[in-house]
Figure: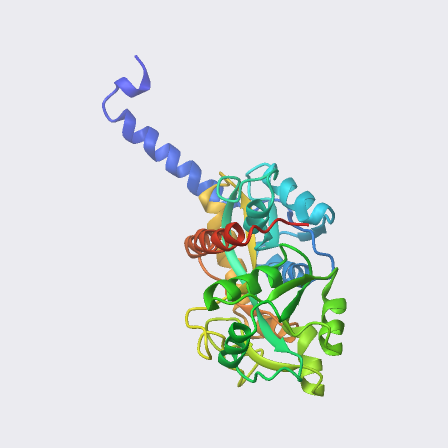
Length: 323
């Protein structure tokens, strides 16, 4: 007779299964965890190191940050997609995880089937800046000027398919204007040409633009988050100053390979979110231009799907391909 043929045997089997799962969850983690990034010295690398330092003691295991740069992030992202789904290999990366597959035909991962989101750790809005000579002091005035002079205004980005490029094409689409894209190889060259008046506009990272706004070499019009940002007190949002509903933020998240046990995902989320919401953590991240989020896996998954739909349309309509 098989065990399933005996009265009550299925109950015993069920209890054994859930008991085993509970024991596994209680024992995780039982060895060091690696957080893989591909952004040495950048925002996501800093975020990963703050998280690693914060969760090491509570989980009782060493958390190691390992940078695997190269191939525009493909090495880091792809290595985690192929890793064992056991909770010991974690990816810390930007929204490139789901944006790159929209920009390139051959990508070694699928953002929806190869990963399980853990949490959006933090985010960073952009800032709309223009050359001081431009006769526009608000987003509404910028839109009016662009409509009056179609194709006459230029904007800088840090490369085709970059976040500033997509953010400005979203602006073009929602505002019904045509401000011409001028791609640069990096933030500094684009900002320098904006300061010199070679281009008229840029959606820049806060850290790169604010010093020049304070010096008067650039004029800040708005922040690209939906709500006002603690990074830029007093600066209105694009949405409230001329383009309702506009939002474009750079997001930095934590992911594990798909099919990682739910217990491991829940444990990682719990400890990471707890660390992120500590006052000292918030202060460290805010100092480098990052605002803490720390949401649930379900909330982060919903954000990813919504952003893929929104930016996918922008990419298709503008026929954008990555460099």
